[in-house]
Length: 252
Image 1 (cartoon, helix red, strand yellow):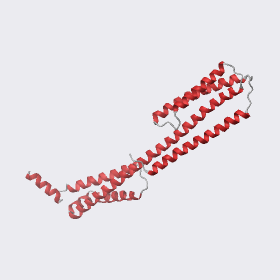
Image 2 (tube, rainbow, N blue to C red):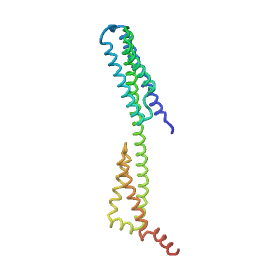
Image 3 (tube, rainbow, N blue to C red):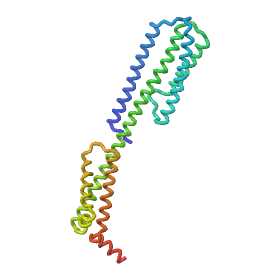
Image 4 (cartoon, rainbow, N blue to C red):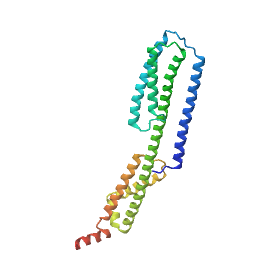
């Protein structure tokens, strides 16, 4: 399927926007790491350090479990799972979990190690958040493309029904003009007013800017009514085409 220049430009613009968002968030995270490293003081022998590591370990394990659950849901809905490779995020979370487990087992008396533990928790969290932001953006764009494709399909079907119905209506008018019996049949069965009303309703859709499914279904019903009416008119005994057809059947 060929992609128009407009769609290529829109896709490239979305990718550039995701890349810009990644660098902005990455820059903010880097600034946070520097500020945390140089301006935050952690007591090396504080009693709550082990409790903090236990909390970070539990939180990392829980978030990884939720991430894997969300990733399963993502792949069941759409192949594109965000801008960041999900395997990288999983490995980073596993690395953070192992690091927190190491600090829980061995009581290391260095504040930089505990700062690294906090950063190793916030880093995967940053990647996970960015991952789902880009996934939701891709999902929204995919649904927009599907909506545009559906609208275009409805529009083509609607115009096709209007075109064919107009041809059928013209043929019925021709038969009605040539054969008074057809006109009498239409008036006797009250088809004349319904036929004109249907074709008028269909032609009014030429000014529509957007078509929905119910509009196409209505146009389809109107078209089939006119088509059946044309078949009924051609089968009328007073129509010359019917006479010729009946004469051929008798001879055969």
